[in-house]
Length: 98
Image 1 (cartoon, helix red, strand yellow):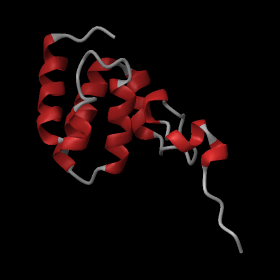
Image 2: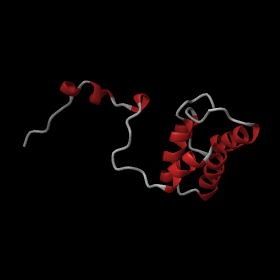
Image 3: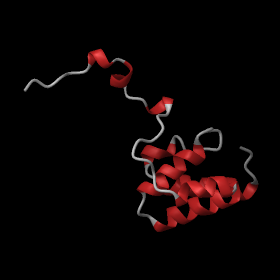
């Protein structure tokens, strides 16, 4: 996606507001930025942050804004950078014995 000046200003404001665990993925070079922000939007109770994300999605277009209006799915799409090591090698997991 191509970001205009207004959009990059909002991304910088969002990055300043999110917790440190999210800061590394909040940058315009992240191809999954808007999807990540939609997840943060649904998890956050910070109304200012939610408003900033809404502004960014409005500028990005109706398709992106629709991500905020639908509740998150029970089984979200797995992103490659968020896969746990155990899901890659299920045989290495520990099983509970009853």
